[in-house]
Length: 115
Ligand code: FES
Image (tube, rainbow, N blue to C red):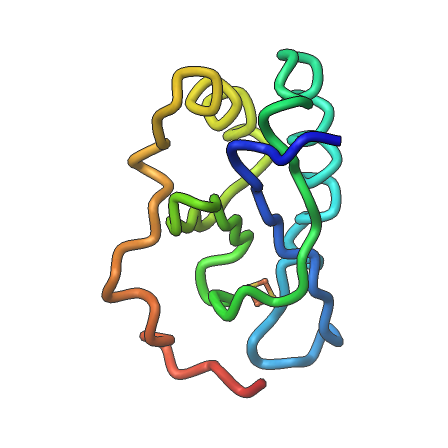
Protein backbone atom coordinates (compact mmCIF):
# COMPACT_ATOMS: atom_id res chain seq x y z
CA UNK A 1 0.00 0.00 0.00
CA UNK A 2 1.21 3.51 -0.71
CA UNK A 3 2.29 5.97 1.92
CA UNK A 4 -0.75 8.17 2.37
CA UNK A 5 -0.80 11.96 2.31
CA UNK A 6 -2.80 12.04 5.52
CA UNK A 7 -3.53 9.74 8.43
CA UNK A 8 -6.55 10.30 10.65
CA UNK A 9 -6.28 8.76 14.09
CA UNK A 10 -9.62 8.32 15.83
CA UNK A 11 -9.22 7.65 19.53
CA UNK A 12 -11.05 4.46 20.42
CA UNK A 13 -9.76 4.22 23.97
CA UNK A 14 -12.25 2.84 26.48
CA UNK A 15 -12.22 3.28 30.25
CA UNK A 16 -14.63 2.00 32.85
CA UNK A 17 -17.88 3.98 33.02
CA UNK A 18 -17.02 5.36 36.45
CA UNK A 19 -13.60 6.69 35.40
CA UNK A 20 -13.50 10.50 35.89
CA UNK A 21 -11.76 11.14 32.56
CA UNK A 22 -14.37 9.30 30.56
CA UNK A 23 -13.28 7.90 27.22
CA UNK A 24 -13.94 8.37 23.56
CA UNK A 25 -15.19 4.82 23.09
CA UNK A 26 -17.98 5.56 25.56
CA UNK A 27 -18.87 8.59 23.41
CA UNK A 28 -19.28 6.54 20.25
CA UNK A 29 -15.81 6.79 18.75
CA UNK A 30 -15.77 3.23 17.46
CA UNK A 31 -18.88 3.92 15.42
CA UNK A 32 -17.32 7.22 14.36
CA UNK A 33 -14.19 5.40 13.18
CA UNK A 34 -16.21 2.94 11.09
CA UNK A 35 -18.33 5.70 9.55
CA UNK A 36 -15.36 7.92 8.79
CA UNK A 37 -13.37 5.09 7.24
CA UNK A 38 -16.31 4.02 5.08
CA UNK A 39 -17.04 7.59 3.94
CA UNK A 40 -13.40 8.34 3.10
CA UNK A 41 -13.08 5.17 1.07
CA UNK A 42 -16.41 5.84 -0.68
CA UNK A 43 -15.01 9.19 -1.84
CA UNK A 44 -12.03 7.41 -3.37
CA UNK A 45 -9.55 8.53 -0.73
CA UNK A 46 -8.16 5.11 0.15
CA UNK A 47 -4.92 5.75 -1.75
CA UNK A 48 -4.32 9.16 -0.15
CA UNK A 49 -5.91 8.96 3.30
CA UNK A 50 -5.80 6.24 5.94
CA UNK A 51 -8.34 6.32 8.78
CA UNK A 52 -7.13 4.39 11.83
CA UNK A 53 -8.10 3.76 15.42
CA UNK A 54 -5.76 4.88 18.15
CA UNK A 55 -5.26 4.67 21.86
CA UNK A 56 -5.85 7.75 24.02
CA UNK A 57 -4.74 10.98 22.33
CA UNK A 58 -4.62 12.68 25.74
CA UNK A 59 -7.50 14.96 24.83
CA UNK A 60 -10.22 13.07 26.68
CA UNK A 61 -11.98 16.28 27.78
CA UNK A 62 -12.73 17.14 24.15
CA UNK A 63 -13.52 13.62 22.94
CA UNK A 64 -14.26 12.26 20.54
CA UNK A 65 -10.75 13.25 19.55
CA UNK A 66 -9.27 12.82 16.07
CA UNK A 67 -5.67 13.58 15.08
CA UNK A 68 -4.91 14.63 11.51
CA UNK A 69 -1.33 13.93 10.52
CA UNK A 70 1.02 15.20 9.22
CA UNK A 71 -0.92 18.45 9.71
CA UNK A 72 -0.46 18.06 13.48
CA UNK A 73 -3.96 19.27 14.16
CA UNK A 74 -6.63 17.76 16.33
CA UNK A 75 -10.40 17.75 16.06
CA UNK A 76 -12.51 17.64 19.19
CA UNK A 77 -16.11 16.79 20.07
CA UNK A 78 -16.36 14.93 16.77
CA UNK A 79 -19.56 13.03 16.03
CA UNK A 80 -20.76 10.99 13.10
CA UNK A 81 -22.67 14.07 11.89
CA UNK A 82 -19.29 15.73 11.23
CA UNK A 83 -18.08 12.96 8.91
CA UNK A 84 -19.29 14.47 5.59
CA UNK A 85 -17.59 17.78 6.40
CA UNK A 86 -14.36 16.05 7.44
CA UNK A 87 -14.29 13.97 4.27
CA UNK A 88 -14.99 17.00 2.10
CA UNK A 89 -12.12 18.85 3.79
CA UNK A 90 -9.85 15.88 3.01
CA UNK A 91 -10.88 16.03 -0.63
CA UNK A 92 -10.22 19.77 -0.74
CA UNK A 93 -6.98 19.54 1.26
CA UNK A 94 -8.37 21.82 3.96
CA UNK A 95 -9.35 21.49 7.60
CA UNK A 96 -12.66 21.75 9.43
CA UNK A 97 -11.92 24.91 11.38
CA UNK A 98 -14.88 24.65 13.73
CA UNK A 99 -13.65 21.26 15.04
CA UNK A 100 -10.06 22.30 15.71
CA UNK A 101 -8.97 21.96 19.32
CA UNK A 102 -7.53 25.34 20.31
CA UNK A 103 -4.10 25.41 21.97
CA UNK A 104 -5.51 26.38 25.37
CA UNK A 105 -7.53 23.17 25.55
CA UNK A 106 -4.49 20.91 25.42
CA UNK A 107 -3.95 21.32 29.15
CA UNK A 108 -6.96 19.55 30.66
CA UNK A 109 -8.91 22.71 31.56
CA UNK A 110 -11.37 20.85 33.75
CA UNK A 111 -8.75 18.98 35.78
CA UNK A 112 -10.15 15.55 35.04
CA UNK A 113 -6.93 14.09 33.71
CA UNK A 114 -6.02 11.04 35.74
CA UNK A 115 -4.20 8.67 33.38
S1 FES B 1 -9.93 8.64 25.69
FE1 FES B 1 -9.93 9.61 23.73
S2 FES B 1 -8.47 11.19 23.91
FE2 FES B 1 -8.37 10.14 25.80
